[in-house]
Image (cartoon, rainbow, N blue to C red; front, side):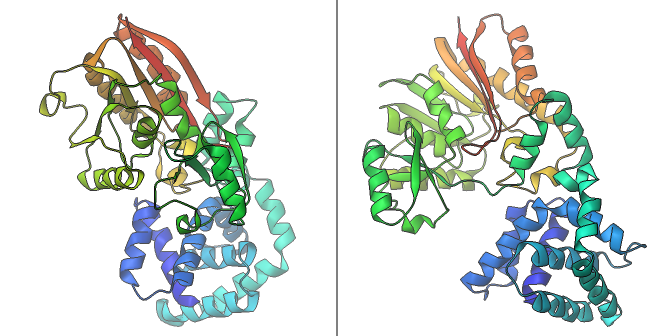
Length: 416
């Protein structure tokens, strides 16, 4: 177990250094290629869990340790062990003993006694320590203080529900490919396979518990894909019909591209700046037996890839803070800084300004983010409409994280 604890502490170190959890997990698997599937699963669960509850554990350590630890890695080991004691089924004695063993390998073993004492004191003082956590907003809600303050300002009625939802495990939602099977029929196939699920409407089916995609009937044949219900809204909002020329300007990994093609016979250009990620779009299209024109290019540099023929529909799924998908990516809340929004806003406005001339007269562009912050959403919409007299907003909606879907923003724009 102490090997998993060491690798998990390494994940936290990388995220603290600015890497994403996805990148850190990939590094860990390269570092330890001999991990069993069970060990890889345990490492992933601990990594995600620690980042969901990071502020809570930092607050607990401040209570248990009057002075900062001289070795940062020891604090990370303690945070991992505390998380295991509270949120995993691992035996308490094993968690403590293995963390002490790991401490013996760090700092020449000088802090074995301290690690042992901290973890055992936590078990003895758990109730009073939890009371201290509940009295501290950052620790209670496990978000940076500035993030909590911003949500309270923007969503005075909903901020607590948003924060609580961010700390939940995300649902696993499927998108049924109607070209292959009707949702009601696929729901019955799931039940026949012993997989509990319910229809959310349209093509969305939510599972009671996540399963591996190999367990999903017909997944390899393209009958179904994994996609959040909120993300599925993009294709519906674009008012698609057969024969339209469509641009998906930031397409990877291809969920929205494929959904559009499932709904209508379209001439789709799927563009992404990252050629490697564009390969995932190709894989999804192949599995679903669909086709699109794939282009690896910077969407904002239209001169380098556009053929001069206007598009009837454009999906502008712009770069954003990803503040609406924190429960799927808990590292986001610790990686973001208040100053990030000015640069994100600049990128967003530059991209939609570059794409707007590519839209045909009477065409529609969907501005989309997976953010819940107004600076990236309604404030961007207002600024865009002020810059473009030929644009009109037909509809916009802010989806907040819920039991059914993640947080998304959509604004449908038409060219007069």
